[in-house]
Length: 327
Image (cartoon, rainbow, N blue to C red):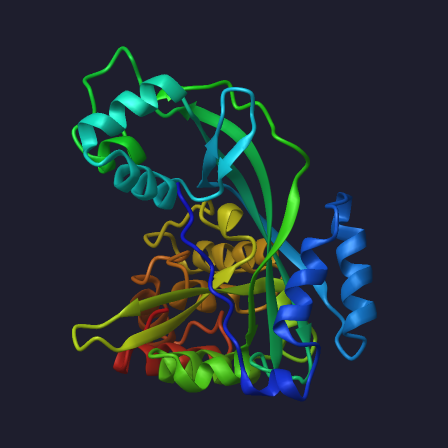
């Protein structure tokens, strides 16, 4: 699945806390990826000693369109779309462009990508944290621009996103590189996020939990940014918490028809897998990891005087049933 371009979210406090964003981006781009990101963490500790960044997780498997190259691998352009638009203007019309491309037989590359998430807390609140996203990119040969065995392209869209691409073997071009994806001050981003009320409720409930002082919020959660434009043309930012162990937690079996002993065992099992107390509630609210019908079952059992959840958790359930929210 193609990853969208990650925009760096600049914040006013960067002027007073930490290095400038351009300086940070240039420094990261000069580093060569190493196992466990040792060079990157050392660099961050050197240029930003006030922060103590920790690697939290890596999400891989995405790709991004690369550039255009000659048959011998020489780079023509790092931007295929711009190169094709410029070539079309030079050729005069699309038919002549195809003739020119037949002669050149250019190759298209792609970037195989992984996003590494790092956090550095500067307070006890979940939102008192910097989240740093660093992309690791490996350029590889992807396809021939023209496919002689398919129908001729009719426009530029058929060249940039063909239905039947002439795939290549994915030969790597050089070494992997780092690229700064995004730096977020969660506290400041929360001020503009359209789902801020739900996030503040989520953070408040986390802080009320008995394990909140015993575990680091960012050991268990990271945030994905979703930036879009509403129907009025206004840009909106949405922050969504995702469990770091989501892939494992999604496979947890639930049987809401079990007896109270069985339900209690399921809650304990989920908490143990997640690594913190009350994980079942937060997994119900964020990430769709827990069936939301669980709330009614727990409420019914509580009203029948079954006390296998705490008073605080029972209050969360009552409040959630009265005013449900999800992230």
